Length: 189
View: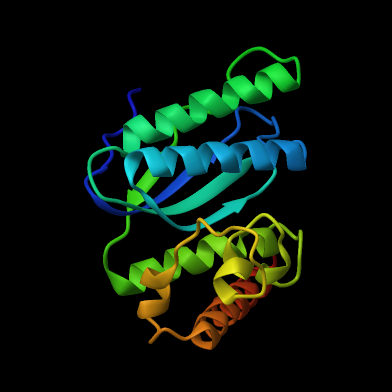
């Protein structure tokens, strides 16, 4: 069955990429840094703004502000180039990315804040860390100002929705975390 058409018009997009099968998309920090270099090259080539990212083991999430219709071209470039790097480094052949990348247009301030919290809370949900800002491979600590690791991340769009307050962003993410944990406990997960 053909995949449904995506809305890749200019604007904010939540984008995700999954490894095929049970493969790891990132095996180590070298892979993570190689992907980040490719992301920076792609965003600069297409004039994208990276609002947030979070790398897990089998997948990655992005919040991008795309000024034109370049999302499919840029994501194809990013995925193909990273896959070639990954396969060469790990002496592997075959497809690394499951199907195609996924994306969803972000509509409005509430949606942006919800997607942002979802993206940065992924490592907490996966049980990798207790606090989102402790995950090394997310832009969240950079946005909070507690790390300078990812200077290419530009999060004023998110912060503007919260009056420019990093404390308000931290409170939002913590509230979403508590809400999610409460739902999981109630559901018996």
